[in-house]
Length: 162
Image (cartoon, rainbow, N blue to C red):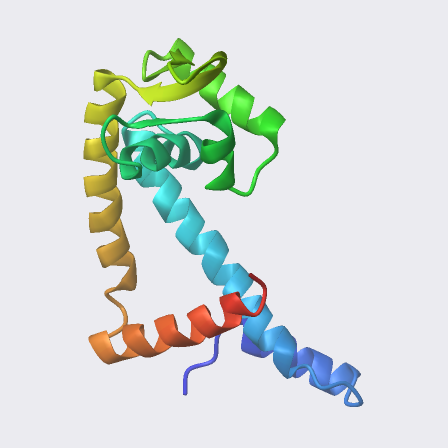
């Protein structure tokens, strides 16, 4: 089997600290390195459309919500793992770009809804299409059975934290 960068690190630790079981370091190191590589590739796709992964997340959450593509700030925040201040900043930037609007909530005039504008809808449609194509490219190194197995393992692992 071909050795990767993490294998070399593990070999060094096994030599220097044979008393430690460094097997988890291999798993977590590979996950971290993959996340870095994959994140860079995903970000490239968004940058080609003038977006970042952060702005895409907001637009995609609004798009996934279905017509009329509006969410309260609280509901929007619940779809992401960020602070309310970070969310406000993202929405401010998207509003300045003309992609979303803050609307008075017709059910409670004291609150607002974040709404996807037609320009934002068109952009997120193009972005999600490009993103999915990129995801197919990035997972093409694995055959269908390997992807299904990895997906099942990662789901089990993620559920332990969620």
